[in-house]
Image 1 (tube, rainbow, N blue to C red):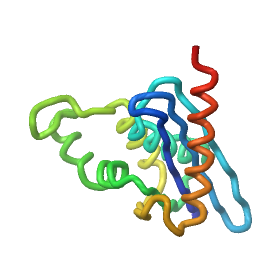
Image 2: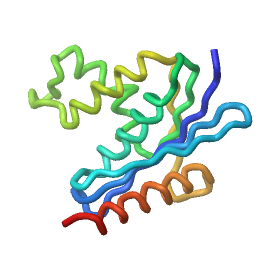
Image 3: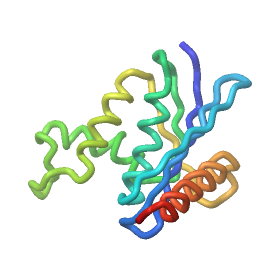
Image 4: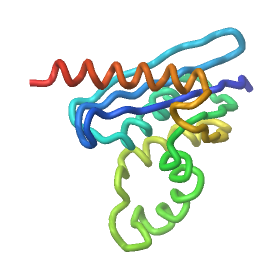
Length: 148
């Protein structure tokens, strides 16, 4: 099974507002950068979209290490999701899970791979996380400029 490292980040100009996401995929000596944007979104949705799109881009099942600076993303997919699924996608307060569409999409992508999640401090010394932040911020700014 191929071992791939995925580094992700999301950005939002306002929250909600125009947003961007980015991911770097590393396999052996290969590197691929992905990014995109949405006109009206939240930072959490962009963090999640980065992970979904990175995993979706892989053509075969892999052993993945996902590096994120989002505790929401890491805890959501490694801890909280199990209870949400048991409770029919409801929170402990009996309210629908926020971003349920993306949690389901992420769960589907994660199930294809052997995935581990690593948290890193944002805007710190992780070069790939800083690069993802730069790409996601640029995508959000470009989305802001193109908005009517």
